[in-house]
Length: 635
Image (cartoon, rainbow, N blue to C red; front, side, top):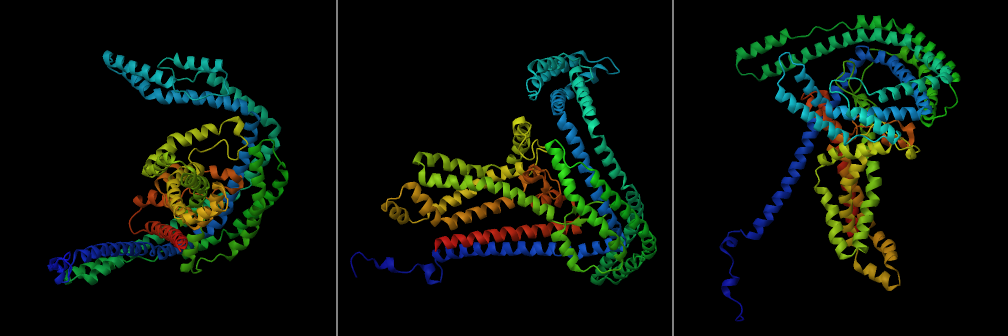
């Protein structure tokens, strides 16, 4: 034994003699944490499945009631009536867009003057009301309080006058005179300023003048609108009867559910007296079978009238489409007219198919479970809490989530990857020490704060910019809604840039330095080495960064809930790129908005859990795919 070795150092610790060591304890600690994570994940999956899978049988029953009560029969006609109303709306929008486009100058001048005055009254209105209420009090007003209120009112006036909205279509003299008239208004004056009223009258006169050459179009639209009056009356009449039948069936279902609950409680009761009491209550709550056949027979008597109304509407629509102008002079009006003309043949085709569908409808046809599944996955309507019928179709929600993700990724991918390439390959050490922490700091900003920024700043600024005359060539400008797909996509792009940047920069960093050294040894420049050697070698990691950024975007809730506009409707794709400036709703947003308001255990409640399962599966698939690319890069 060498003199450096100490026998006491080689002796095992007393805990090691008993099969215990600090190394093993640390190993077990981290292993238990990993196991706990797996258990928690399994419990989450089990909970989601337990709450969500009960949705489809419940939705199946709702679809059965929908058919048995006759609502499905009425919806055959209601569908065409809704399409007729939408076409009428599009034609009316085209008509007014043509008129307003021809007198755009007068419209903008009137709108800007009204917006300036409304912004002033919004800020000074509450203080002004306090002054008036105190001045008109039944008893003698408190002079000191009135004096303070008037002083506050003057301060509020000065603040409002200092932050008035822009009026680019008013001359400086007109704006100055308008502001002066607003400043000199008496506190009890309730009329609009004379200049605001004058501009409104000028705009109305211009509208009447421009409407004269469009009288033929106005007459055609009115004729088409009145062509659906017979069908509208029939649908209204049938609606009342089927709603009453549906309420009877739902009442019987509730009683049957209560009876089953009482029977289950009776089977578990140990006290014979309590068991007999529950059994008695169950027998008492036995629901009578509602009369369905009688109302259905009365409903089916409307078949000939429905077929006649559809035939008349089809003939009128076929005649009227030939009376529409081929085009209009204003861009937005021409787009709307083109959209109406594009939808018209489909509308007429549906009208032609409807008589066969009315004759073929059977109230006793079975509703299989697959119908509830397909209705959920391919349905175009998410309608809840209405007196008619609840529908749980996720297509409008999925379309909203996808379009916001497209906007976010189109902005975030080049920005995040470009920043990663620059910081890793070209930036100086000083630039790296500044740029990288700033980009990664964005992750620390709470999403609700970004949502407020989107509502109060970004959305408002974007809407104001869309009013510029020089930008009217952009599809969707001027914006109808400041909260829309594009606004939400821009904010989500900002949130996903740090994720894409950090992971892409790590992927580039993991490329062996020998690759770059060999490229430079062959005479390649730094730019050639970066784009022809380093980036291709890091491609798998960069793609994983993009996928994880997509997962970050698709799973975001608060920003889209605040900024996307929350309109549950498939966007109008006939608007082209203007589609991205329309409001929408998302899969995550619908869960956050509705989960706290629905009764626990209801079909609506379980539908939201199915949406959660779908989101969980999508994000899990994205992360698994990204993990695969990361492993590919390592090997």
